[in-house]
Amino acid sequence: MDVGKIVKVSGPLVVADNMVDARMYDMVRVSEARLMGEIIELRGDQASIQVYEETGGIGPGEPVYTTGEPLSVELGPGMIESFFDGIQRPLDGIKAKVGDYITRGVEIHALDRERKWKFEPKVKEGDQVQAGDILGTVRETTIVEHRIMVPPTSGEGKVKEIKAGEFTVTDGVAVIETDNGDVEVTMMQRWPIRKGRPYKDKMGPHIPMITGQRILDTFFPVAKGGTACIPGPFGSGKTVTQHQLAKWADAEIVVYIGCGERGNEMTDVLLEFPELQDPKSGEPLMKRTVLIANTSNMPVAAREASIYTGITIAEYFRDMGYSVALMADSTSRWAEALREMSGRLEEMPGEEGYPAYLGSRLADFYERSGRTICLGSDEREGALTLVGAVSPPGGDLSEPVSQGTLRIVKVFWGLDASLAYRRHFPAINWLLSYSLYLDNVAPYFRETIGEQWNDMRKEAMRLLQEEAELEEIVRLVGVDALSAKERLVLETSKSLREDFLHQNAMHEVDTYSSLEKQFKMMDLILTYHHEAGAVIEKAEIDLDLEKLFTVKARERIARARYIPEENIEDMDQIKKEIKEQLVPFAGEGGEEDA
Image 1 (tube, one colour):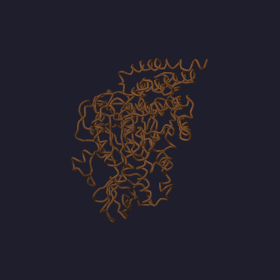
Image 2: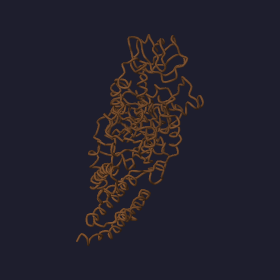
Image 3: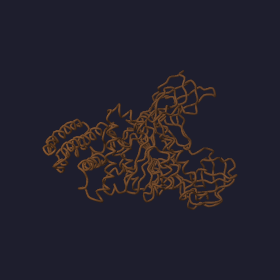
Image 4: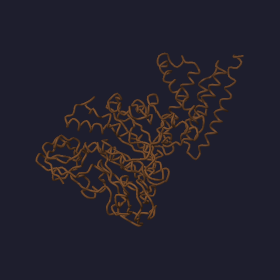
């Protein structure tokens, strides 16, 4: 182990010389306190190190120990249900070792070395295997079957030995005979966080990730293996929206990264998630979730690592053939950590002080998403969907992090403070937001729900856009200046906004809507629009619009979102009522027309 010497300390940045054999992104131990750090710049034998712990009290002359390895994560049974910090130290383990407050230099394994897991082989001696093949399984939780794979670096070979029984993550469970000698396989892999895990092939984003949130699924869907961002000002609901996605999205594994958010927000997540019930299995949601917490009062440099730690864990589960959803809250705090480290390195600043390489770092992160054919002979599919929250200062979407993110991601869920102030949640502005996956996923919706889905979505979007234009006229000359048809557009759009787009995350029924329920709700609103429009066409003179707009069926439409999933057939009855209650209006004004 080579030893360097500290020559400069500037906050989380430590500069050491005599680092002769050091390489970029090698992990080092700084000072006798053995603080964890990572080399981020090399000039001759001088290395700049970002330290992931508090550097107070450390000064020039103290040693730096190189490890010769890049910063890596431990991947194996025991990750699900765990709370890690930004560099994959288990917070429960730290608490058990040093108490409620994290002390410096705590060295603790990410995965428990004592716990034994029951390994069930899926191959037998003599079988030919290759990198990525599943050797056996471990029942990690009641929901998740952990698949033990041949490491990506092992190559092809024959199973020389395979064991069954209970083992720790470091015990050998198989031996593979390769051209380069025998390879012992344990249940744990190590992988560098800055290097994407390999796969066979990447597939097109043609299957939507169903979230149960009406505005997202119907208007701005994200594909499995796709990328989305949720930018918005403080208090507009980014975190709650991501919680909803973690709870309800049809992903088998959820990785949630609290990157630089306030400690009390992350505390809510840590307390809330174990209490949440997974709607598919009835088990606690934590039984398919990995949480990474690196709050705003924790070391700034570790924010930068937490994003990569999270995505490497997510890639590992994707390689097993699972659909994984990763929530990063928020990438703005990560970018601020990049800006601080860049400033301490005295690099030439880019726009608003962010480093010039901000765009490429964002791209590196989001490009690790995708729907893939995994390594191995069984051609299994995996998907990794990335959803990043962005917290632009003052809600200014023209700032560099928002703009850099929008250039990369395909879905933009723009949160609007004015909607949040009016208590309209999710406060996603339907006029600003967009999804570039609409054409890709349209065939799926047509086959699953029906031919009308895409036409109904387009019509609803057109009505909402028309409403925005008509509101300008109403502000100037009042609602009485509008024609009956234009007033109907306002009424229908109001119903779309208040009865469809508004969704109560805290209500036990309204918190989630299946695609079928979303379709039927939209159908009710548009059925009323078409039937009322037909009445207006036939009898525009002396028609009592107030009565037309306040028929009893409209109250039933408004309450439709509270109809439980098992009773959604009741909406067919509401549709009949709409038609029956509008029949009497069809004759109004007929004599005058004649």
